[in-house]
Image (tube, rainbow over all chains, first blue to last red; front, side, top):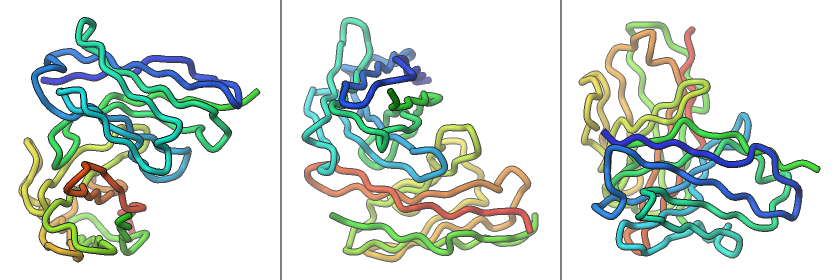
Amino acid sequence: QVQLQESGPGLVKPSETLSLTCAVSGYSISSGYYWGWIRQPPGKGLEWIGSIYHSGSTYYNPSLKSRVTISVDTSKNQFSLKLSSVTAADTAVYYCASGYSYGYAYWGQGTLVTVSS
Amino acid sequence: EIVLTQSPATLSLSPGERATLSCRASQSVSSYLAWYQQKPGQAPRLLIYDASNRATGIPARFSGSGSGTDFTLTISSLEPEDFAVYYCQQRSNWPPRWTFGQGTKVEIK
């Protein structure tokens, strides 16, 4: 069973870079699946941020592409999100998730990131 | 960019009733459509993938149908634990990109 756990600062200052890590257990990242980040502003819907395939290819939401970097550390079996130049609009619960292209079957519990000075 | 529009925004039903949720795509997504359930404070759960296939462990009362631009999630008989928000999600063929609908809340009447 794939298990995912997000970690990172819960508070980020405006204009700085948001950095989160998703630790994976029960499955080797390099074996398969897409590994993605999805966020949800308080009281709102879901927004796909981007994903990385087990081969290392990355795919980003066009609306965030200029600010997003997703990378994998196979030695630690984890993947990471960096979102630069954050504003209050980036305040959200950030989820890491994994699955096949047809859907994300495995999700972390989510972590709230607040952008505020 | 493909836009997914879900309707209704809120569905008020009683336990035991049938729920029918709609998801319409701004252009054809073939059968690349998934449905998720989300309860307060929880991560979404994959219910249906490729329009009509139930994910592992999903009860048979959940079913999906449709192709192209019009899709439906049906809950045949609502259980108390089914009251939640439901999202549809499409995947573009290439490059892979995923888009969510705005959600339908199924609430107790």
